[in-house]
Amino acid sequence: MKIFVVGAGRLGRALIAFFAQGGHEIVGASNRTAAGAAAARERTGVDAVVSSSPVLPAAVDMVWITVPDRNIASVAAAMHAQSPIPPSTVLVHAAGALPAAVLRNAVPSAGGVAAAHPLQTFADSRRGPQMAREAVWFLEGDAEAQSRVRELLHGCGARTRPLPTKDRALYHAAAVLASNALVALASAATRALGPVGLGREEALAALLPLMSAAVRNLAAEGLPRALTGPIARGDAAVVAAHVRALAAVVPDVREAYTVLAKETVRLARELGEASAEELDAVSAALTSIPARIQAP
Image (tube, rainbow, N blue to C red; front, side):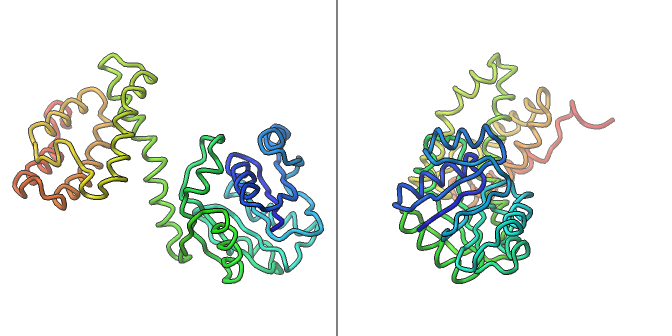
Protein backbone atom coordinates (compact mmCIF):
# COMPACT_ATOMS: atom_id res chain seq x y z
CA MET A 1 0.00 0.00 0.00
CA LYS A 2 1.23 3.52 -0.84
CA ILE A 3 0.88 5.86 2.13
CA PHE A 4 1.38 9.60 2.68
CA VAL A 5 1.61 11.04 6.21
CA VAL A 6 0.59 14.65 6.86
CA GLY A 7 2.02 15.86 10.16
CA ALA A 8 5.37 14.25 10.94
CA GLY A 9 5.37 14.83 14.69
CA ARG A 10 5.83 12.06 17.25
CA LEU A 11 2.80 10.06 16.10
CA GLY A 12 3.41 10.74 12.42
CA ARG A 13 7.03 9.59 12.63
CA ALA A 14 5.97 6.47 14.56
CA LEU A 15 3.45 5.61 11.83
CA ILE A 16 5.96 6.16 9.04
CA ALA A 17 8.33 3.65 10.63
CA PHE A 18 5.50 1.30 11.65
CA PHE A 19 4.00 1.09 8.17
CA ALA A 20 7.41 0.83 6.51
CA GLN A 21 8.31 -2.09 8.77
CA GLY A 22 5.02 -3.69 7.72
CA GLY A 23 6.19 -3.66 4.10
CA HIS A 24 4.26 -0.62 2.86
CA GLU A 25 5.63 2.19 0.72
CA ILE A 26 5.77 5.65 2.30
CA VAL A 27 5.47 7.86 -0.76
CA GLY A 28 5.89 11.07 1.20
CA ALA A 29 5.36 13.04 4.39
CA SER A 30 4.99 16.64 5.42
CA ASN A 31 5.25 18.86 8.45
CA ARG A 32 4.37 22.52 8.87
CA THR A 33 7.76 23.37 10.42
CA ALA A 34 11.24 22.91 9.01
CA ALA A 35 12.42 21.42 12.31
CA GLY A 36 9.67 18.79 12.22
CA ALA A 37 10.39 17.91 8.60
CA ALA A 38 14.10 17.61 9.37
CA ALA A 39 13.39 15.34 12.35
CA ALA A 40 11.24 13.12 10.15
CA ARG A 41 13.98 12.86 7.51
CA GLU A 42 16.61 12.10 10.15
CA ARG A 43 14.63 9.49 12.08
CA THR A 44 12.68 7.76 9.31
CA GLY A 45 14.65 8.39 6.12
CA VAL A 46 11.56 9.78 4.39
CA ASP A 47 12.04 13.08 2.58
CA ALA A 48 9.40 15.12 4.39
CA VAL A 49 8.43 18.46 2.85
CA VAL A 50 7.73 21.63 4.80
CA SER A 51 4.04 22.31 4.25
CA SER A 52 0.75 22.40 6.16
CA SER A 53 -1.20 21.35 3.04
CA PRO A 54 1.10 19.36 0.76
CA VAL A 55 0.42 18.36 -2.84
CA LEU A 56 0.00 14.59 -2.93
CA PRO A 57 1.84 12.34 -5.38
CA ALA A 58 -0.23 11.00 -8.26
CA ALA A 59 -0.74 7.53 -6.79
CA VAL A 60 -1.58 7.35 -3.08
CA ASP A 61 -3.74 4.64 -1.53
CA MET A 62 -4.10 6.18 1.90
CA VAL A 63 -3.42 9.57 3.50
CA TRP A 64 -2.95 9.69 7.27
CA ILE A 65 -3.51 13.14 8.79
CA THR A 66 -1.75 13.31 12.17
CA VAL A 67 -1.86 17.05 12.82
CA PRO A 68 -3.43 18.56 15.99
CA ASP A 69 -7.17 17.87 16.23
CA ARG A 70 -8.17 21.50 15.66
CA ASN A 71 -6.32 21.54 12.31
CA ILE A 72 -7.49 18.24 10.79
CA ALA A 73 -10.48 19.59 8.85
CA SER A 74 -8.70 22.69 7.53
CA VAL A 75 -5.63 20.71 6.44
CA ALA A 76 -7.77 18.16 4.58
CA ALA A 77 -9.78 20.92 2.88
CA ALA A 78 -6.66 22.87 1.88
CA MET A 79 -5.01 19.77 0.42
CA HIS A 80 -8.09 18.97 -1.62
CA ALA A 81 -8.46 22.56 -2.84
CA GLN A 82 -5.02 22.69 -4.39
CA SER A 83 -4.84 19.09 -5.58
CA PRO A 84 -8.17 17.16 -5.67
CA ILE A 85 -7.94 13.91 -3.72
CA PRO A 86 -9.01 11.04 -5.99
CA PRO A 87 -11.93 8.81 -4.95
CA SER A 88 -9.59 5.83 -4.75
CA THR A 89 -7.65 7.42 -1.88
CA VAL A 90 -8.75 6.82 1.71
CA LEU A 91 -8.40 9.72 4.15
CA VAL A 92 -7.65 8.77 7.75
CA HIS A 93 -7.13 10.83 10.88
CA ALA A 94 -5.77 9.52 14.18
CA ALA A 95 -7.57 11.80 16.65
CA GLY A 96 -9.34 10.17 19.55
CA ALA A 97 -12.14 12.65 20.15
CA LEU A 98 -13.12 13.54 16.57
CA PRO A 99 -15.34 11.44 14.26
CA ALA A 100 -14.40 10.54 10.71
CA ALA A 101 -17.17 12.90 9.59
CA VAL A 102 -14.82 15.87 10.00
CA LEU A 103 -12.93 14.54 6.98
CA ARG A 104 -16.13 13.91 5.02
CA ASN A 105 -17.29 17.47 5.71
CA ALA A 106 -13.91 18.86 4.66
CA VAL A 107 -13.69 16.74 1.49
CA PRO A 108 -17.25 15.74 0.46
CA SER A 109 -16.01 13.95 -2.67
CA ALA A 110 -13.56 11.73 -0.78
CA GLY A 111 -13.86 8.07 -1.73
CA GLY A 112 -13.57 6.93 1.87
CA VAL A 113 -12.89 8.44 5.29
CA ALA A 114 -11.96 6.82 8.57
CA ALA A 115 -10.78 7.63 12.07
CA ALA A 116 -8.20 5.26 13.55
CA HIS A 117 -7.04 6.09 17.07
CA PRO A 118 -4.35 4.05 18.84
CA LEU A 119 -5.02 3.59 22.55
CA GLN A 120 -1.40 4.45 23.21
CA THR A 121 0.95 7.28 24.10
CA PHE A 122 3.89 8.18 21.89
CA ALA A 123 6.13 10.28 24.14
CA ASP A 124 9.12 7.96 23.46
CA SER A 125 9.82 8.38 19.74
CA ARG A 126 12.47 5.64 19.74
CA ARG A 127 9.85 3.00 20.54
CA GLY A 128 7.16 4.45 18.28
CA PRO A 129 6.73 1.50 15.89
CA GLN A 130 6.66 -1.03 18.73
CA MET A 131 4.12 1.06 20.64
CA ALA A 132 1.92 1.33 17.55
CA ARG A 133 2.08 -2.43 17.15
CA GLU A 134 1.18 -3.08 20.79
CA ALA A 135 -1.77 -0.67 20.78
CA VAL A 136 -5.40 -1.53 20.25
CA TRP A 137 -6.67 0.76 17.45
CA PHE A 138 -10.26 1.97 17.58
CA LEU A 139 -11.85 2.45 14.14
CA GLU A 140 -14.83 4.46 12.93
CA GLY A 141 -15.96 5.81 9.56
CA ASP A 142 -17.08 4.50 6.16
CA ALA A 143 -17.38 0.72 6.06
CA GLU A 144 -15.01 0.28 3.10
CA ALA A 145 -12.49 2.75 4.47
CA GLN A 146 -12.54 0.99 7.84
CA SER A 147 -11.98 -2.32 6.09
CA ARG A 148 -8.89 -1.01 4.31
CA VAL A 149 -7.48 0.55 7.47
CA ARG A 150 -8.18 -2.66 9.39
CA GLU A 151 -6.35 -4.69 6.75
CA LEU A 152 -3.38 -2.32 6.94
CA LEU A 153 -3.14 -2.40 10.72
CA HIS A 154 -3.66 -6.14 11.06
CA GLY A 155 -0.98 -6.70 8.44
CA CYS A 156 1.42 -4.63 10.55
CA GLY A 157 0.67 -6.71 13.64
CA ALA A 158 -1.77 -4.42 15.48
CA ARG A 159 -5.23 -5.17 16.87
CA THR A 160 -8.38 -3.19 16.07
CA ARG A 161 -11.82 -2.64 17.54
CA PRO A 162 -14.84 -0.75 16.13
CA LEU A 163 -15.88 2.45 17.91
CA PRO A 164 -19.46 3.78 17.56
CA THR A 165 -19.45 7.48 16.68
CA LYS A 166 -21.74 8.36 19.59
CA ASP A 167 -19.22 6.94 22.08
CA ARG A 168 -16.11 8.80 20.94
CA ALA A 169 -16.11 11.37 23.77
CA LEU A 170 -16.59 8.66 26.40
CA TYR A 171 -13.86 6.53 24.84
CA HIS A 172 -11.43 9.45 24.70
CA ALA A 173 -12.18 10.42 28.31
CA ALA A 174 -11.21 6.88 29.35
CA ALA A 175 -7.99 7.16 27.37
CA VAL A 176 -7.13 10.47 29.04
CA LEU A 177 -7.80 8.98 32.49
CA ALA A 178 -5.54 6.01 31.81
CA SER A 179 -2.67 8.04 30.35
CA ASN A 180 -2.64 11.78 31.00
CA ALA A 181 -4.24 11.43 34.45
CA LEU A 182 -1.57 8.89 35.37
CA VAL A 183 1.12 11.49 34.64
CA ALA A 184 -0.84 14.07 36.64
CA LEU A 185 -1.16 11.55 39.48
CA ALA A 186 2.62 11.10 39.50
CA SER A 187 2.97 14.88 39.68
CA ALA A 188 0.60 15.04 42.67
CA ALA A 189 2.49 12.26 44.46
CA THR A 190 5.84 14.00 43.91
CA ARG A 191 4.37 17.20 45.36
CA ALA A 192 3.22 15.28 48.43
CA LEU A 193 6.80 14.08 48.90
CA GLY A 194 8.18 17.62 48.67
CA PRO A 195 7.76 18.40 52.40
CA VAL A 196 9.49 15.09 53.16
CA GLY A 197 12.61 16.57 51.61
CA LEU A 198 12.57 15.10 48.11
CA GLY A 199 12.85 17.25 44.99
CA ARG A 200 10.68 16.47 41.96
CA GLU A 201 13.21 14.31 40.12
CA GLU A 202 14.26 12.41 43.23
CA ALA A 203 10.64 11.86 44.23
CA LEU A 204 9.69 10.62 40.76
CA ALA A 205 12.65 8.22 40.71
CA ALA A 206 11.50 6.83 44.06
CA LEU A 207 7.88 6.47 42.92
CA LEU A 208 8.42 4.92 39.49
CA PRO A 209 9.24 1.39 40.72
CA LEU A 210 6.02 1.42 42.75
CA MET A 211 3.97 2.71 39.81
CA SER A 212 5.58 0.19 37.45
CA ALA A 213 4.81 -2.65 39.86
CA ALA A 214 1.18 -1.53 40.06
CA VAL A 215 0.90 -1.65 36.26
CA ARG A 216 2.50 -5.11 36.20
CA ASN A 217 0.02 -6.24 38.85
CA LEU A 218 -2.82 -4.99 36.66
CA ALA A 219 -1.45 -6.98 33.73
CA ALA A 220 -0.97 -10.12 35.81
CA GLU A 221 -3.97 -10.02 38.16
CA GLY A 222 -6.53 -7.71 36.50
CA LEU A 223 -9.28 -5.87 38.37
CA PRO A 224 -9.97 -5.93 41.26
CA ARG A 225 -7.21 -8.34 42.36
CA ALA A 226 -4.40 -5.89 41.55
CA LEU A 227 -5.64 -3.56 44.30
CA THR A 228 -3.50 -3.40 47.46
CA GLY A 229 -3.05 -0.89 50.28
CA PRO A 230 -4.96 0.51 53.26
CA ILE A 231 -8.31 0.94 51.55
CA ALA A 232 -8.26 -2.64 50.28
CA ARG A 233 -7.59 -3.66 53.91
CA GLY A 234 -10.33 -1.39 55.25
CA ASP A 235 -7.93 0.61 57.43
CA ALA A 236 -9.92 3.79 58.10
CA ALA A 237 -7.42 5.12 60.66
CA VAL A 238 -4.62 5.19 58.09
CA VAL A 239 -6.83 6.85 55.49
CA ALA A 240 -7.90 9.49 58.01
CA ALA A 241 -4.23 10.19 58.74
CA HIS A 242 -3.61 10.62 55.00
CA VAL A 243 -6.46 13.11 54.71
CA ARG A 244 -5.19 15.14 57.68
CA ALA A 245 -1.60 15.22 56.46
CA LEU A 246 -2.48 16.22 52.92
CA ALA A 247 -4.97 18.85 54.08
CA ALA A 248 -2.30 20.47 56.22
CA VAL A 249 0.43 20.69 53.58
CA VAL A 250 -0.95 20.17 50.05
CA PRO A 251 -4.74 20.64 50.27
CA ASP A 252 -5.32 20.49 46.51
CA VAL A 253 -3.58 17.08 46.41
CA ARG A 254 -5.95 16.03 49.22
CA GLU A 255 -8.84 16.74 46.85
CA ALA A 256 -7.35 14.46 44.19
CA TYR A 257 -6.64 11.79 46.82
CA THR A 258 -10.26 11.89 48.00
CA VAL A 259 -11.74 11.57 44.51
CA LEU A 260 -9.51 8.61 43.63
CA ALA A 261 -10.00 7.00 47.03
CA LYS A 262 -13.77 6.90 46.49
CA GLU A 263 -13.20 4.81 43.35
CA THR A 264 -10.74 2.71 45.35
CA VAL A 265 -13.45 2.02 47.96
CA ARG A 266 -15.82 0.88 45.20
CA LEU A 267 -13.13 -1.46 43.89
CA ALA A 268 -12.31 -2.68 47.42
CA ARG A 269 -15.96 -3.67 47.92
CA GLU A 270 -15.67 -5.77 44.78
CA LEU A 271 -12.40 -7.29 45.99
CA GLY A 272 -14.02 -8.32 49.27
CA GLU A 273 -10.96 -8.46 51.53
CA ALA A 274 -12.39 -5.82 53.90
CA SER A 275 -15.84 -5.92 55.46
CA ALA A 276 -18.64 -3.59 54.42
CA GLU A 277 -18.45 -1.92 57.86
CA GLU A 278 -14.71 -1.30 57.51
CA LEU A 279 -15.16 0.25 54.07
CA ASP A 280 -18.05 2.39 55.33
CA ALA A 281 -15.62 3.75 57.93
CA VAL A 282 -13.08 4.48 55.19
CA SER A 283 -15.72 6.40 53.24
CA ALA A 284 -16.57 8.40 56.36
CA ALA A 285 -12.88 9.26 56.83
CA LEU A 286 -12.72 10.55 53.28
CA THR A 287 -15.73 12.82 53.56
CA SER A 288 -14.86 14.35 56.96
CA ILE A 289 -13.10 17.71 56.72
CA PRO A 290 -10.21 18.04 59.20
CA ALA A 291 -10.93 20.67 61.83
CA ARG A 292 -7.88 22.74 60.93
CA ILE A 293 -9.23 23.51 57.43
CA GLN A 294 -12.92 23.87 58.22
CA ALA A 295 -14.45 27.17 57.11
CA PRO A 296 -15.11 29.64 59.98
